[in-house]
Length: 301
Length: 301
Picture 1 (cartoon, rainbow over the protein chains, first blue to last red):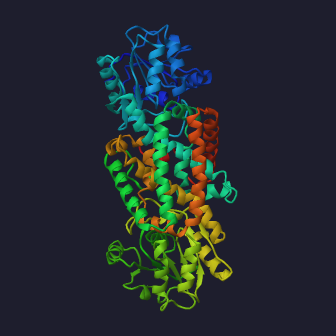
Picture 2 (picture 1 turned 60 degrees about the horizontal axis):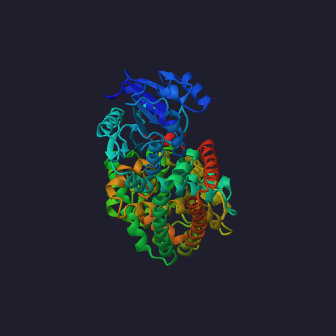
Picture 3 (picture 1 turned 180 degrees about the vertical axis):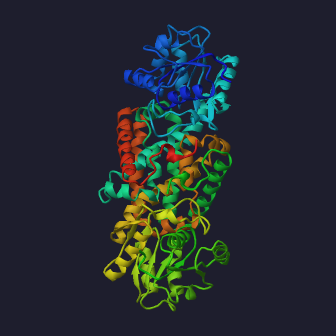
């Protein structure tokens, strides 16, 4: 059960609209107020009946909130927190869904020095964006990471944990720095590489874009999905998790160099060993319910 | 309609077993003979009734064949062709499904200097392997590339084209060298990078494997699918398309270095521009029916 009577969602994109839908689906007694800085998003939210109320300003959106969830791109979270500072009830809890945690937590705390802040990150999403792309089951079975620190009241952390569990998520706590390093590996560098490979492929002299598109089923198309994710959101993630991303990228570059060398010198055993080891990771991900066991992600054939 | 009365499939893994199933589903009058060098695969093929006949030797498998389809890993194709040389009928056509074409075509022609050889490559697959993973619809809507050269009788190319079209594929012809360059971009380098990133992630000191698995839904899990593909097949592809793979990998490395620099110096515009451009490629792939339009590949949520 969601331990809040009134929840305000600031930012009604994929994640914000999924939270609103999940609340209405799984905790219909909670009153959900939404706000988005973009008036056309607010209009859409009203048209599709996303929330109980859509407020016209950030301040009025939070005026009686028990929980405020900031669902804006990482680079805009500080400004979003500042916009609610004057109207936030003293006892309200503030959380967020940003994909980088150390810099975001600092930005929220700077804007809201007296609020109970529980930085959070649901590790879930699709490549689609906007208020119409959200769906209630997005968080079911996925992990949500909370990164409370010494300034976070433990009761606030416990209530935010219960909130995510009511939406179907599993919850883990860790430090913001550790989160940023883990997500650099499992999310940020994979996205960067996907963007890079799609960019490289679309920019060659001897292979045309139409060939790249036609023969994408050889593997390339998988990368285009995450390279279709929201550009603003991802720009902000990279700018706000710089050190960890660059460190993991450096490790990956070393490993690619090793593979390059193995190919150049015809070292089939080195390739075979790696390709066997990576299969086991896939099996573990499926065993733990973190991916669809159907071949090819269950794509229609 | 398949323009052959008797087709022999050598190698009953994912692709070979899918061809057998497609023939029986869409052209049930064709007599399908199968052979695999692995006796346990032959036993499975008999048990699941994959073909009309499962032969005990490569020679007996081809003895009355009109078309022979070699579906073994690229590195084993020369030996597979040599194994049928003595028994191949003079008028039979030989094709293959190897993911690298220049070296494979040379190996087949060396083993079968008098046969009509139409090198081919259906750009389709899943991460699963073996005779039980095949399915009839694997090739529907996918492209099959044929790489005939001056030694290929054009009537043989036309018949192999009709064969693939009867299985639901679209067919394109190009030179073997061009194929190898195109596939380096759309398939080989994406696989190599996926293998690399899964290897890197499973090998870090500060992030555990269980964390990598738990939080894989942030993007990493997408890479684990293609990094679960058959190790032997992929080892052979890289060893047999060395130059093109290394060239594209070099281009990718340059582009990643540019992104690394943009992150280090906080150049958000460079990131945003690339991330916007890559979205358009995804849209084109979906518009042309080469991927599932459902969010997240249609994964169950």
